[in-house]
Image (cartoon, rainbow, N blue to C red; front, side):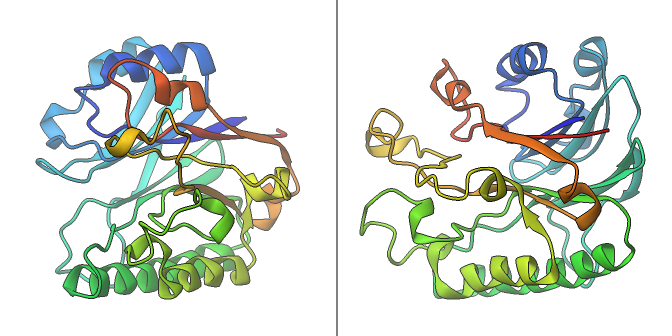
Length: 258
């Protein structure tokens, strides 16, 4: 099984990019973030024609998450992160696909920090960690995939001081990611590439960052114990970021033994 995560940064504006990548990469499961569309604007017909079933949670202008499955219909199990009924932001969706629980997340950015957006970011990650721990304790095969909006380590960002005050690299943010690893989740990219310095998944549109390879690692796939034992490969489809009308993120993928 090939499973991927891709922050598409507006699914309707970049639908042709997404469809072309689906044809080329042929992932079995895809977690999408930043749909930036209402539920009724989700391009279900075009995706179905490409061979993918889908569940999704939209939000006008911002956020939005979806799970696609090739030749199958994901079984929706949750479309909101538990722990705060007042939180209406579309940042989490969960479904079962071929016996695997797929959790797709688009975590808050948290900027500017300090401030209410950073406070929300940390509180959201606390809620996510609590739910992730419950999923882990079930013993089921579970994947946590998406844009975590956290740079886990200094080597996961290009050499710069411009991000020193950014919420993505703050100690509290990195501690939230480390807490997930401490639960027992496996960071798939780092498992496959433990010593590689540059594993970037995001390149900002500004300041010529893509041509300069001034990237960050924000998109992660974490595997439960059962799936970590089946990990056969992982990678980043960097070339997708260089296409015309590209998202500022590149797809991240893993291959799991069946």
